[in-house]
Picture (cartoon, rainbow, N blue to C red):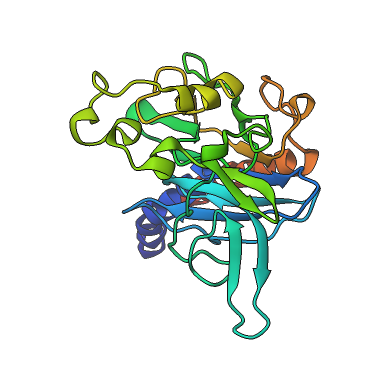
Length: 289
């Protein structure tokens, strides 16, 4: 009897642990650019920390990360990064997070930067996600959900286009005599009507401008200004996601699981299947006792 009580007392802890394992998401960050990208990751206030906050991705390289249940935060790509040989400080010309190291350690992206934003297991159990150009743009990026869910707006979103080439001159961030990023009008001018601040702080008073329309025309599913919600926020249920830098349309199809590597798909399925199998074994053991 004592042995049975011991097993039963442990069961809630085991169930909680297995539930967290089963419900965690896998985010796979992939670099299809012909240059290195250093992803940065920032958790929102009060949400679980991630196992990493920054790392390098060489061209054609991917890295999969287990994301805790209920996590919210953002991800972006840093470009033109280097380490000072004298001070050892790591910095990037775009998307720098100010930490001085490859890990961002709680630092956010310095604008302009293309952002992927997530809130997992939010209202009605849905994941909310978007790609935002509100803080400007530094490189193409798309988010591809890997799990379909009925009744949700579970679509590919992001920006396939290189906006730096035709960025309006007044918005250009230049490096080595070429445009390396495209600022938002808010960042460039500080005008409340572009920042949706002050008397322009409501959806009724802050609408699209010629500058935000430049972003929207090229990237119609991405946020182009603060109140661009209607065409820019998407939802899935308990999904895994692939975040790709410099994507091509052929590698980011609007189909569940399309573009997902066999390795990432298999490892995620194996982890969930193992959790379910272990749970069944424990329940059987307890009842036999």
